[in-house]
Image (tube, rainbow, N blue to C red):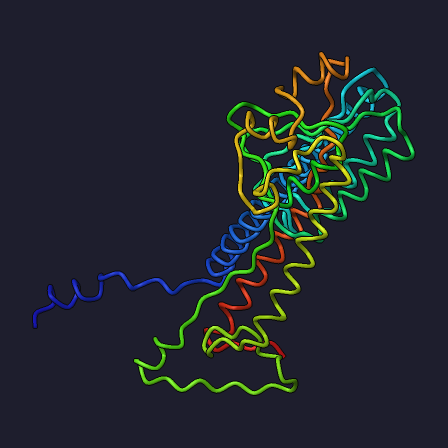
Length: 329
């Protein structure tokens, strides 16, 4: 190697070694970026919390607004309306507690000139219906000057008619369906099916008739007779209530009146099951004399809806966790 080559090697630059200052600058940049991200995340968190607070504030205002409107309107002359819609049963919207709450609120309203039960129900529990029936009669005794009318839309049968019969009058449409004064208990029998499939029924009871009307066992004549006697007793209570509420208006000479059959509104008027034709607006204006209407049907509380949703969500999360093999200690 000649002297020229050696000089070229000696002149090649050396790779610079990172200085402590460079490492410090890099670390500062990383920390600053992390702090910036934390600030942004905190800002977004505050934003979403404020958004949720505003959402719940508006929701509470919307819930409170109808209540304040109802109170202000309740002082003026009006017709109180209570909806009895859907199945009458505990846990359903048309349950006895809710209907009775609406009845009491309407009866206590200063400006209420009359109460209309807006009926559109196929019936339901005889117990729930009896509770409402007795409450209507109680209000009528306390405030005989306050008329209570039942106005039927599409249907008012079975337990629905039980309730309506306590009213002072029942108004229907020509095509409304009314009646069905009867009691039913239904089930299925799978005895032949499980025999063909080779399934052995195993049931243990403490009490001779605890498995009464078991759909997988043959019908026990003694149990059947007992259940029929129970149904007959409830049916007679239903009949007595209708006769008491509709005293002097029923065509008792009609054999099918308490057979569970249904009739149109026109036929119901002829049989004494209803008093005349009319809808909610015409009854409020022409019969009660107060065309302004205020609905006293209790609405589900917002807090109940929220807690119910939380409960459903939590239950779903719990089922998912258990199915995935995760257990809570």
